[in-house]
Length: 154
Length: 95
Image (cartoon, rainbow over all chains, first blue to last red; front, top):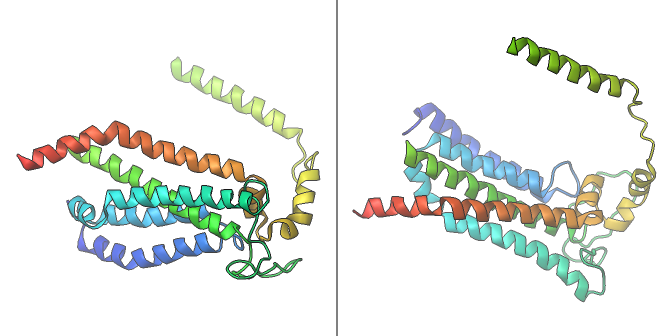
């Protein structure tokens, strides 16, 4: 079942913007409102928009369920691994072992009210990305699988 | 009769809730030591400008871990319950 070409064109135009917006929310989780969970939900919404606009079979050919499941597992493993490395660094579980260490996300944060720098936050951006991958995979898998059951009954 | 009873119940319920809320002072929580501490020390302790993210991913990291696990369990359950449907459908295609 295809929607009208107006809906399909609109979905095609909106899709990249939704993806960019979702990844922006995930990456800037330690600076602006939002974070991994919200950004992952926005990205999953982009996939749902494609599912609504286009025929079901086309989506199944383009987006592999295995890929989404692997994304979900990868996110969860990255999350736990980042938390575990803190133990190696001599901190508590979930300790911020990258804070102020230089390099990726390691710039010391300037105190007080400031617009913020993307390259700060230590492990918090990494945890944000991990949760974003987790939520993106999980929500997409749940919606895709439920849609599969709905289509079978119809 | 049933409809009238429903509306009476809703009215009583809403009135009791509003009565409780009427005595509250909004914007002035009684216990705010934790809030003040996080706002004062959040940036230097976690390195995040966003206090909400600092709370969710640093002060209460275990909570976020549990949330991620809940999502994983949901996917696991969905896969277990609906997997047979998907496999049956594939068999139909092969016939």
